[in-house]
Length: 309
Image (cartoon, rainbow, N blue to C red; front, side, top):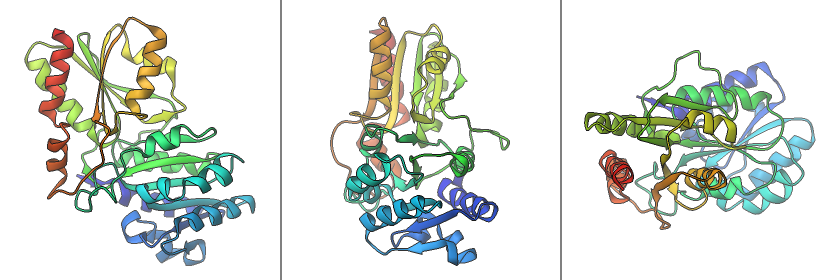
C-alpha cells in the first residue's frame, strides 16, 4: 500500500529541480499535502500563505502571470470551496497556468467529518471552462500526472486521496490525458471507476465472475476533457454500465458518463456514489464506505440487479 500524496510531493520536488519556474504554495497544510518536500529542499521556491485559501489562488495567479508554474496545494474541500471565486475569475477565465492540487479528497479524511470532506469538488471544477480535471487511481498514476502537469499549459485540477492504495499500474506507466484504461473486458456489465475505488471495482468484478457474470472494469482518470471516443471503444459491445465513485452522484464521473451514453442511446446505466448528502466523521475509511453503501458488496449487488433487470 502506498500514499499517493507522498508520491505527489516527491515528484513535485523532482520536477521543480528540473524546472526553476515551478513553485509550490500551501495554506498551512504542507505536511499533509506533502508540498513540504519542496519547502524543505527548495525554500526559495515555496510560499506558505497561512489559512487563506483565496490568497493562495490569487498569489498563484500572479506568479503564473510572471511566467512561473505555480502548484497550489491544500485540502480539496478548502481549495475548491473557499477559493472557488478566485479559481473561476483569475485562473480559469484568463486560462492561467496554475495547477490546483486538492489533497485528502472524497471521504478519505474520515475522522474530520463533513467540514473536511469534499464530495462535490469534481462537479465544481468540471463545470469551469478551460479547466482540466484529473483523478488518479494509485500512486503510479499520481506521479505520472504530476510529471504531465509540469509540462502542461493551462489550469488543471488534480484530486488526491488521503487513503493508501495498492498499485494498479506498472512502474513505467506513461500518462496520456483522456485515455480510458480497460483493466477487464466484460460483456454482461462494465464497472466504470475513478480514483482510489478501483481496487474495490476489480474485487467486485471477480466476485461477479464467480457467479457467471462477465464483468468489465474501466478506469477513468481524465474526467475533463472526457475522451468520448476512447470511452466508447473501451466499453465495446457492453450495454450495461455502472459508474462507481467516491463523490456526489450529481456532477461527477456518473454524470459525465450519463451525458455520453444518453447521446448515444441504447445503454442501461446505474450511478453508484454518495447520494446527494454531506459526509460525516467515522472511526475509519471503510466505515464510511459501508455507511454510504459504497462497499464491494454494494457494488456487486447493484451490478447484479442491473444485469438481471
